[in-house]
Image 1 (cartoon, one colour):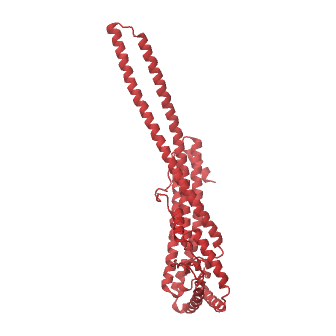
Image 2 (spheres, rainbow, N blue to C red; image 1 turned 180 degrees about the vertical axis):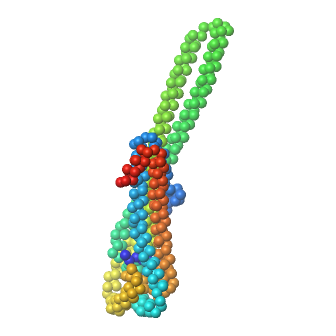
Length: 405
């Protein structure tokens, strides 16, 4: 798969026909809307453990199933990342083969690359007169022409999905805060009931003591006050017990809602991090700031391509040089040879080759970070399942059955 390796150059504002790039303010607004995290960092997006009653069979099995699903999702992400990582690593190995080749074996290679650079420079000079795109973007379009339309659609879908995920994160965060506030309110009410019960108990003890004193000291009949006091105490006790029961029920319901919110928040966090890093990688890969700019650049490229079709005077020489370049690269043992047609300048300019290597290392680092994140998710979930399995033999059977899928 041919990919764009060079850094993005500065853009000019318009071409000879007045073609305009996507407005700067619009592209920055879209990028900020999609990539900016909603007030949280990677630490806040780490997976949280749910509070689950492991003695409850249905809750325990459901929790194990959720852990298994998180492992599978992270595993699928790792598979896609490793495929792209292997491609980037292959390009770096090819560069190493070129660097390690003896100078006498690279004479024809450099000569062919130099001819390609000169011919391409002339063509690019004519192309830049009418169409608005950077050199890096033009090379990217040439290298990925077949996949750009599909990637445009994917990138726009990722951006739309990112906005939805951010809204879900905010909504879940608000919901968790409301549930925590409800828990604090229930605890406050329960404490208030305890205080009221203690105060009323002291009052009843005092009243009972007073009535007993009146009975024994002054021989006053206390039957009616005693019955009234007992009835009052019974009614108050019933009210307090009923309110306490309601608070316990409310606390159980609120705790279940909190666990559900934590579970949903964990799922959204995983999707959020993966989507953000996928977007960041695609932006870096295509040297654009958003899908709108990619569509614009691709449209410019398609228009320019029609004009380039009329400028074929140097086609024969260019094809011959490409064949020489391909033969020399094959002789050196390069695996991905076709991409060097559009990157011949890197073969004759050491600074350009340094930039190529740097860009590939940056891309590989981004992939490694995303791979590490998903690996961490799998490890955390497996550790949690392992901890549950170690508690009881029947738990171990359930864990093995779920993992056995």
